[in-house]
Amino acid sequence: MKKWQSREGLKELTIALVEYGSVTGSEEEVGIVEFVDHELRSLPYFQDNGDHIQTYHTEDGRKFVTSLVKSTKNTDKTVIVSGHLDVVDVEDYGDWKHLAFRPREFTKQMEEQYDLLPKAVQNDLNSGEWLFGRGVMDMKAGIALCMSLVEAAAYGEFDGNILFLGVPDEEVNSTGMRAAVPVLLELKEKYHLKYELVWNTEPMFAKFPGDDHLYVYQGSLGKMLPGFYCMGEEAHVAEPFSGLNGNFMASYITRLIELNPDLSETVENEKTPPPSNLLQKDLKVDYSVQIPHKAVSVFNLFTMKKSSEEITNQLLHLAKKAAEQITIEYRAKEAAFVDSPGYSVKERKITVLSYQELWEYALKKVGNEELNRRLSRVLATVSGDDREKSYQIVNEISTICKELAPMIVLYYSPPYYPAVCSASNELIKGLSEELEKLTNEVMKEELTVIKYFPGLSDLSYLSLTEGTSGLSPLTKSMPLWEISYDIPLEEIEELNVAVMNFGPVGKDPHRWTERLNISKSFTDIPKIVKLGIRYIFSN
Image (cartoon, rainbow, N blue to C red; front, side):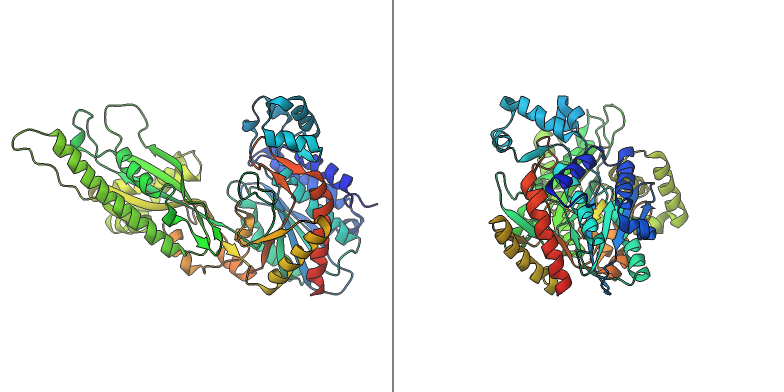
């Protein structure tokens, strides 16, 4: 008997998935993979084809799952349906966080606390069409949809093969998808598959508050995390002009980069949000009256078509501009403060360089063995995340090169998401038009075609617009590259599969008011997706 082909079946499966509080890095993130594996194995197809469903371990001990249903028709045409199994934490739920993973109970709680809710949430509650809870939208409903497609394929509904991929860690470092790429290549060869596209079932994202439009995405935004390490000169606070404050330097970097429209990218009528600061701090460990002469500032930078070299050059240019402004402002402040006869204002020159250039300078000075010893010490003693390890490595290498100070060093932290777009792919073009037509027929609504999914997604690791050599300005200035972080670039280039995102309808991802539209997500969207897959196999 089919379990997940009805509205109620999909709803129950989604609730069961949400009840696994699979916050990134938690034990439940592993548990939910085992649940999905168990549920899929209950299908008669996998009782006869047990080797077609497998779980795999990532390097850090998490799991991802694949399940392949081969069509009774002799064909190599294969659609990969994909989604992530992790969610963000529930601290934003406050006193209600104990209900965040209980959609039925939390939706009832929202009704009981109706007067405390925002007007838009009240309006949705009044309709009776919304289910609340962490992960209902992002993206347990999408996973349920993928599982229902596997079931439909198992009952012979498609004239082609369906391969489901469910991964962990999309919300932080995409460890799951990065580990899955080589597996996709292995499955392709083992089962003689031809991948037509990867259909991600991430939900539709609003472009602005109150946006109720429906979207299909032909790609996904890229993301870089540029950091700027600032090393000034130490000094006692009683003699501040004898040194240079690292926080003072970092503030000029932030002023030039934060929300800078020149660092926003436009492709046709789509535009990336401008960069925003994610971290800014000095590196003093304890309180003292020494000025903090080392500081770091890290930014989120979205990308579409710009190359790594172009972005790196643009950032270095801004860093040099900041260095000029710092020296001019510092000289002016010092001249205004000092009135002692015979005192001359100190002339300063701030060195600006990339981490690659810093490394090469240090390599000539102390040699490879000493640099690797320093690296090993940082990795062994720093317990923070990849962002902290990155700037601590830059700090360690900079201490070897103190003669370059004051200096600003541009480096990159993980994660890196390559921008990907399949808008020029003929299948994606035709499928987008078909989905527009189907949405109008089924939902009586317009569907808007968007080139880049705005919320970041694992689609970034399935096709590589910029070749591996073109990424060297990024990878050679990423301290953790091929040490504790890497991307299977050559495998991605070999895979090179078209991508698309179209999934359930909801609101407020990553907020305590996250919710899912029941009728659209469990009735209309599944019907449209099935018809879309049939379109793929018929062309």
